[in-house]
Length: 70
Image 1 (cartoon, rainbow, N blue to C red):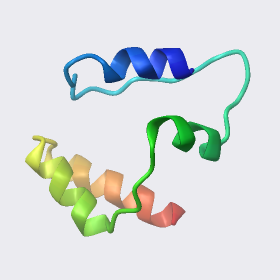
Image 2 (spheres, rainbow, N blue to C red; image 1 turned 135 degrees about the horizontal axis):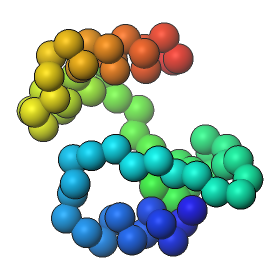
Image 3 (cartoon, rainbow, N blue to C red; image 1 turned 60 degrees about the horizontal axis):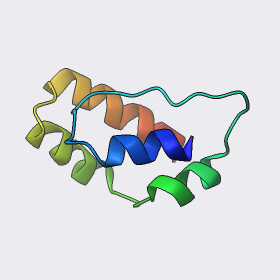
């Protein structure tokens, strides 16, 4: 997983989604240790998505989903 994430990190942003899979599950903590983690308020997260061009309905869906997991 780390090699795949490193390859993505060296490229220009794709503004796309990338599935990270492998032969075994990875914990959230292990993934965060590789890619980093920043706790963001839902409104801040929504503003970033909108600034990057995400559609408002999808921004609402993403922020609602992530807020329910907090």
